[in-house]
Length: 348
Image (tube, rainbow, N blue to C red; front, side):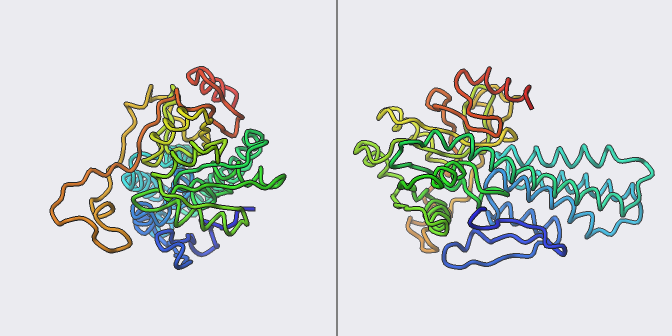
């Protein structure tokens, strides 16, 4: 079981944990409509590519419920508008668009005679199916990837790719949770500037699970690798291009280059819904740029002079040559990724 339930349907509303307050406060929010869900995704109250997809699926249902449409046709129009609206929340995580495409296809495929109540029930069923699929996917990623950590005494991870980032037990952390069932090892967690998802979320989550964790700043990774403290690096992904180039939280690319230099394998763990075969390589992945205040402030305190210009990409793109393997629910995929990713999709 995951150490925390990030998002769940309570029967009345969609309950999410507000990740912007962790680890200081554990507060749950009751999301009742698509506008509140859009805000939660945009403001990183719910974050992580798989979790964003799950949240978006629920957002479509909440939009139909809140609108109280008078006919099935009107309910379908509300669902489609909500899907378009939720798609504007964040640009990089392909799971968001995958989940919304599922919702669009489902409502468009309903019978013309479907009532508003039937459309509402169908959107909830689709959201629940997306959520359950993610739970099963995370578990499969953990099972397939855990053997990669056999004999490892130290693992390095970046950002948060655990239960807080998914609807299940996580992606990168799923490997760690599964491997930890058999033996003890240490996880080194990058703090992950500028929003400290490693310090605030990963360290908190691993502590909840009772896993030995050492927090380091991003700039300490080279030292940890050079001293042989870790024998594997495991990260998640927000989008994977057809050739295996991987967009993940900014700071992943330099970590991958360091790992290659010190001959430590770097594994990317992600569901196939994160793979975008329509994008040939990483140059075609849109990278979200965040607000300047995320860099000029630290913990609510300004740390940079007023007026300084800021460049703040949320993600960077790691070239496929630095990725030792991609772990998906279909198994462990190896280079060349153009072939192995296509084969994994064909086998679905």
